[in-house]
Length: 268
Image 1: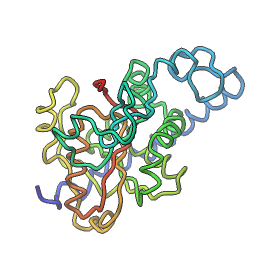
Image 2: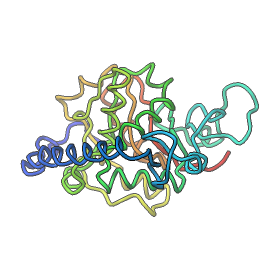
Image 3: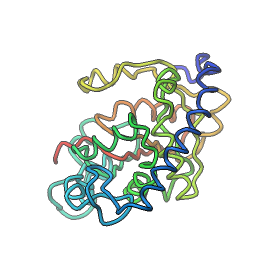
């Protein structure tokens, strides 16, 4: 797959021009929610019931969220149900090694995580970016400590126009601000519109995103020799992460790790 791709030379002007207007509206909406939160008692981000602190979860949702802690596969980040001592590698990582180096996620893709992700992606809840970034920063502390730059998984311009913002880019910027790491959101581009991955089998997901990403020649220098952390909202089979990592490696990235808010888990 060629690294340079003419379709990403320029996004349609309408999509680019629309973004500042939407960003302003989202800013004021987030400001209104923040004002309400300072007046009313803290509520759970997921279920809206009383919570112990602003920007957090109630005890029930916290327990149901399934935050991921060690022991987990050092390659895939998949949690283990037992600790045999020392670094652990899952059978899946041996049987089908990913293109990326390591993956870490803050929580399992439980009902709570699904609801939170949907609120951000489809509910314009940009106020969720900060707490999500906090959780992801904690989960990916090891990766972020070694990173030179963060790269969000991009949306195709048509999807960006419909959704008005890229949730992965928002998360990457928030994490970059916390960790004082560069966020490169213009190097990796989605050059082919793909159907949603929901409902597709592993092989179908990989085929769906094959050739969907590229790095324009002029942007290769931004990732060449860099240790990259690829940022996304959910890791399912790893098809999208693998497709992005493959392109980043071909552009000369020294290392590609993956950090997501949630991941689908098959218990090991």
